[in-house]
Amino acid sequence: MSNADDLERLRAIEVALEARWPETRIAPTLERISALVDALGSPQMAYPTIHVGGTNGKTTTARMIDSLMGATGLRTGRFTSPHLESMLERIAINNHPIEVPDFIFAYNDVALYLDFIDKKFEHPISFFEAMTALAFVAFSEYPVDIGVIEVGMGGEWDSTNVVQAAVSVLTPIGFDHMAYLGNTLSEIAHTKAGIIKPGSMVVSARQELEVATELLRRVAEVGADVAREGVEYSLQSRAIAVGGQLITIKGLGDTYSDIFLPLHGEHQGSNAATALAAVEAFFGGQALDPEAVNAGFAAVTSPGRCEVVHREPTIILDAAHNPHGASALVRTLQSEFTFDTLIGIFGAFADKDVVGILTELEKVIDTIILTQSSSTRAMPTAEVERIAREIFGSDRTIAISDLESALENALAQANSPSHENSVGIVVTGSVVTVGEARGIIRKIPRLESAL
Image (tube, rainbow, N blue to C red):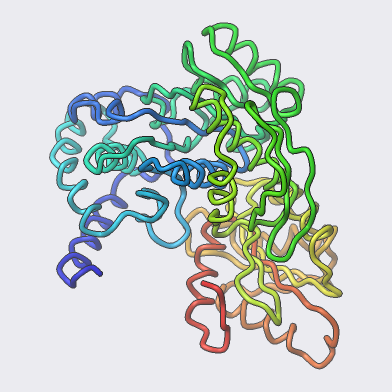
């Protein structure tokens, strides 16, 4: 439990960090973060790391790796982004968000160096660079046995790419952040492949041909080894189970049968196979203890990723923010849920492929409520509504700018006498929309949620 002084100090630190360059404002270079970690004594070199890049499934895969590593008895540190509700979520020790006193301690170690490096460069240390350094310091001070580090954006020039990872993981790569990463899959893959280090082991999820070609070119260029989904490892089978699925994975060292994974969707089964292969690769490709594998996967959580937070009506939160993620959500809703009516609540960022996302969602959503989060990046509700009307039609779209009011409207619809059959509500479009929805749901007394 944190005392009042700690919480006040935490709020002050959050204000100071958020006053820095936002993580969406990118000046592609490793110069600033390299100078910062050098000044700090290179804390990221104090423990081995697994580096997780890609486009979709990075956070969940990182959480799975973390849980598996913990089940083998290792002390773990995990850095992921963005957060849903609290920036403390980004830095996890032994699969739990960092404690407030530990976050304050790490920040105090870093703060003076932030100001010092600010003066050396044209642009100051950004929010994401500062958080990356904080994570590195927190993990070295704990200390952890293994760091699981998720790439923020891209790879080659991402702030996390000052690590020398023993294993580099590439989840499925698709179109996202094109303004920074390129307009073709090959260009995007080239940037993301920048995390592959000489002599490392690369674990790659199933990729499009042009992506696989680019990744293999980088592997050959730096002399790394590679394990590919569908070749060296695979998800062999999956069956829907209460609260998730039962999966069988052919790993690098063994085949693991009837693993319970408390997450929904075939894509999560594939993420699990990639996570397992990454952990095997870290241990030299040898088989893992089946009991540890079962325990590790059984403990996995992935907030905001097809997360069921309430029943009757069923409320699902999913941070799908690009067409690939929306497609995975649609397949999961079609195959693992049996709603007679599905109500969507959608709020997206203005720089995303909103047409592509809504085109996917239209396949399963009966009525869509257009809204917006508090983020300055949010697309205005009126603009989202204009796009949605072209895809859903006027009779299936409702515009409610206030997210809490949008949720209340969806609940009223779901509880209406006109809906006598199974009704579901899905909140999606961006991580911020989902994160704010989680906070709102937690405060609604009549919702006995799982949060």
